[in-house]
Length: 426
Image (cartoon, rainbow, N blue to C red):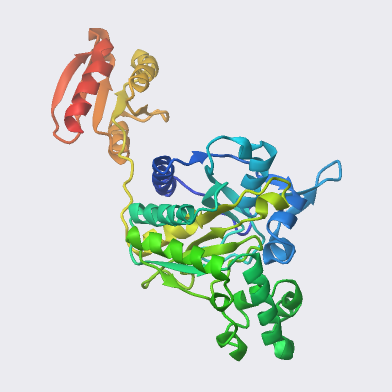
């Protein structure tokens, strides 16, 4: 039976996995500098969490979730996004009672959505995300956006475009909702079935429709910016002012609509401009979600966050030919000649590794010539040759594979001597 990997998933093989570790190191480091603490939530949650937290009218809940019943008949869902789980944990663990607010959290992990697989869009994908919960200060919005922009910059990307919009508060969204219903109602029959069902439940989502994006009514649809009340307007202006002070350029797009029901006020996306990235130009998105904590049973605790796709980031790095620093080869490869030297090599490898040295040996009974070839393939900086003659004399032949220089070292002194040599080389 030929068992293959499930559609929409991928194996991250050696060579590529180093690129993942590279961006993960940058991610953890920048979150540390911004004073965000890591949170890890379950891969599956109660289905109701996403129905209430993400929204019944979203494509995620209606079409894309991996939902199943466990043996007790409980409905569980593989998490399709990270925010709802983080907010659930915030409420369940009463983190709203901590003296320092907002509670600044970040996460890394796989998400699952049943979508048509395509470049940059997988059924199992990995997201980096942050959530800042407990403050409605516009400065938190600006900080979260700046963290995302700085992460992409440090990863090596260029041509980034920050797009902003305000979805307003509850009052502003209601006014805009009524205007959208009045605008689309007379000709809603010309739209797709999804848009027709959204007209009454969530007309804002019509603006996000890919199938009807070229319909004439889309071009002159009411703008949310025309329906912002004074508070929402001041809030949005403050966010923009803070970004200006941070020297972070942006573009305001009144048609920017996030695909999740919980967003209000600031919404944003980061895109990449330039050739070579294909049709998918959006790298990430996020926004403010005042009201989500209350929806999940907690006290009033406004929040803001974002999530980004690691797969799309790596695609962008490839498209821009960004050279990712790769881990060097081995520090040392032990070359042995069977018998007692082979047994000694096992113990010697342990000592080298305990000394922090990356080391390996042959396990395929290759002759010494084949072992030297293996050392070259593994880009070993040094080889340590231990044959019968060296074994009997209690020494090992240490060779610098770049300079060709050699020296004899007492076997017990190899870890210390090799550490000295490596310091000189590196």
